[in-house]
Length: 317
Image (cartoon, rainbow, N blue to C red; front, side, top):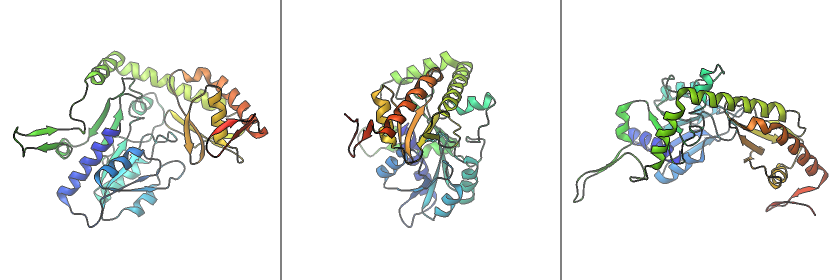
């Protein structure tokens, strides 16, 4: 997934350099909720990344528009974003990209194998793909909700002519031209073979059924946790990641530690302090058990039975 993002940034940068000059450092503008891999790509290529505060857990298109300058060459949207599971306003970003002639990459590493099938199932999914004319490229991880072995992702580019900007080519040595489309030139074929096998085994109907079950698991988890006092859902996520924040000053690092001690492992939310859960087709079955233990842990944190220190979190003796 990271490599698909690095390649998208490289393609957009090379295309921009072929048609324009930069007065300063080339820059990418995106929401703070965008994946860290974009900043990693920028670090590798000497690019500036400008991250704009979100609004209602999604990219703030108006704030992004105000941040665009002459050195901006790329915009980023998430479908859905890793922290909270929301689909950004890709329609608004698409219009912005067209207005300023910018490359728009949609990070669908998580949502690429969820959102199309959710849409087919009748869920209201905001536009996020190449049906929007300003979308230049997309990434989608096969090894996430594609259920294939780790190490397989997709980079999709709208215009075949732009793929040349992705390629690395070198011929000033003794063995002729060296061409490669990726960062890592040689790699094991196991993940590719595994992806081919899994996708052919599941097919459209298999993925559709898995997404149906996963979205039902998500609904069950949200409905069950809604009865827990002390935490609240972050917005209205479109995808299969759900984030929860603490209420009334609840010490969420201590809550996470209390749950971890009971065998529950979850993602961390730092802003706002909380936790996130990645749903799958079976997590709905344990929603009641998780919610009950979450309530017990919250009560322990409030009573002082479970405390957290500056460096780590632990149970009080």
